[in-house]
Image (cartoon, rainbow, N blue to C red; front, side):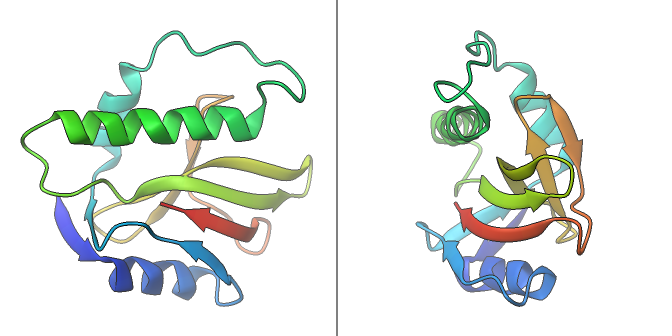
Length: 135
């Protein structure tokens, strides 16, 4: 794990998406974590409600997953700061506007995690046009 200030996290996001204006960072410092750590945390996320159009869809999956990861970090004494893990709203060529989770690893790679589909990927530019990030 590697520490990063909110300013450093913002710079990583702005480097990837220079036009991104909606970056909401609520902490002063974050932990950049590994994909393996994220997979371990997410493997204990059980009892996710099933998809229900307009009631529990992509934004709800992302919100619950974001809260779960934050709760895990807060409950573990080994972490000094919260993970650089949050929510992202973006455009997908196939499905239009979508919300998923986003996290930044120690090597400053940005990853998307779609809790609804249980898929992890690095965003493709310009295919993933990002509008909003919240951590």
